[in-house]
Image 1 (cartoon, rainbow, N blue to C red):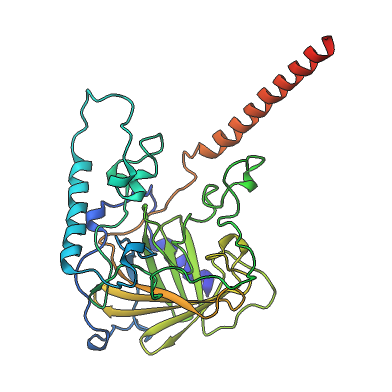
Image 2 (tube, one colour):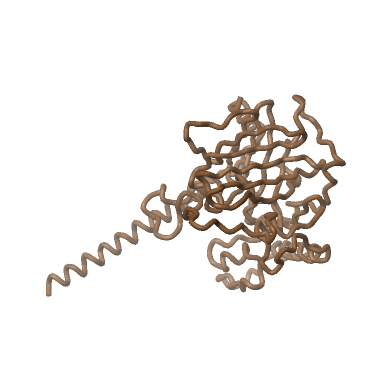
Length: 365
């Protein structure tokens, strides 16, 4: 039945190159109705209907800005100021480029722009505003404008226990001096799974682009199509966790319904998809609840007794995408990876030639 669910989803999706939507359309600012006041519609087989195209793009960061301390919500005045700044960003980004501007992009002052825009620093690799979808609205949960996705008291990851295992790297490789072969590069760079945690669990926006999803339901499976990057996450309903020790990408997700809420427990995440340094003994429990026609409440709880003293987590609300998602097509025209490896081989030859020349000169003396 899982295969049938995936095939049904595949035929429902159009095929094409994916571009990020304009950020101003990514996250409607409408306040959600109280969960108790809304009854989710049912599918033809009786489940609460979560199906549709959704986005979790938002201005609200995963971790609360340190200066806000324990302040869990923004004032409406702060919300208006932050969201108006995005309108200005979009207007400036859509303005015609001066044909007489210097070829070299101006350097940016990180203190004056959002981190996701300052990351490239004006260097090659920086995207124009129209290609980015970092969110245009503060995340509201039950109508409250949140300062962080995490719901810990200070909005930060909790401290690790003394003697907790060392934190492994995320993404299956990558970084400096990892150019020996394709397998040493990151999973996202190799187009195997998306970078960041869009696919989850937990499912978190990457602050860059393609923070979009399609949810499809069948009587015994829920399939989430993750735009970043062409990932299909299959949640088996009313099943048991595997016991063969295999750790598939996105882990082993088992779901069941508690009233109108889909509860998903995931174990067996691979090391390459560790979350905050936890993977081997990690359990993530997610809850999906349709709270309004245009909102799906999402919460997650993280548990690993070898890493943290007690479970912790976060929450947000999905909003309608206002369109459909297309195939990410990560491999199409992607010449970065062969360029990286080819450059490393050329550098090795140069170093070998230099070493050989130095040895020859030393022997002549």
